[in-house]
Amino acid sequence: MSSPQKKSQKFEVDAVPQHIAVIMDGNGRWAKSRMKPRHAGHRAGVKSVRQTVELAAQRGVSYLTLFAFSSENWRRPEDEVTRLMGLFLEALQREVDSLHRNDVRLKFIGARDQLHKDLVKKICAAEDVTKNNAGLNLQVAVAYGGRWDIVNAAKTLATRAVNGEISVADMHDDNFAAELALGDAPDPDLLIRTGGEQRISNFLLWNLAYAELWFTECLWPDFDAQEFDEALAFYASRQRRYGYTGDQVA
Ligand code: FPP
Picture 1 (cartoon, protein in one colour):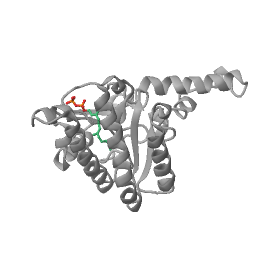
Picture 2 (cartoon, rainbow, N blue to C red):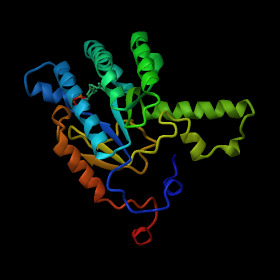
Picture 3 (cartoon, helix red, strand yellow):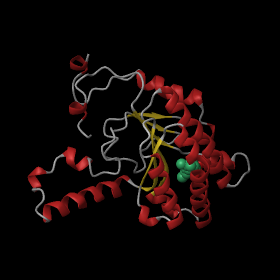
């Protein structure tokens, strides 16, 4: 869904965002400040992932989308990339049963063709086993980039047009958005970025169009319930206008 005014004609902000997206930044600095190697920071970050998933479910969030590895992260030292991929595989193996028991539906978004086949196999199996769950929708972005996503969707619609299935005039933001990695999931209401940087870094470029943005200095491995609730309180204080005036919304 890409047109907020179509999605919702009521303007009061729900106290809890339906969809939270998170840029988990600061693992490297967390490790460095403890004289540890960077991968120790990523490993510590897995604990924050687990806790954040639990908190999101407890607070009534329906969708949680985590940026675990960007299209640009392939540029990192080979050893760090290898360890990160190993960590994703390990976390999947260890956590899927518990996610399934807790009714979480798991989905991965990103360029799967760039991932090792063993990881892709685990991803497909995890998605399959959790596909009918009705609790939290947990979406993990791996080898994901917002520009990659938009180009993919454009290619899909262009192919349909070339095949005569749709006309160019029939291309709208709704059917375009449906071809993006998030598909028919609602757009994120709130973006949380840890680690002090204030940028979007090629995450969900289309879908974040109307998200409220919350940045914190907290490094990802230190992200906890207090930080999460601060972000929720910030969100609850926002007036979302979607192009209308404040008076119209009020
Ligand atoms: C950014 O911090 C973090 C990453 C690129 C990796 C995120 C991965 C995890 C939290 C591991 C577990 C994830 C899942 C989904 C199981 P950074 O390395 O850029 O930190 P820095 O800016 O301090 O160097």
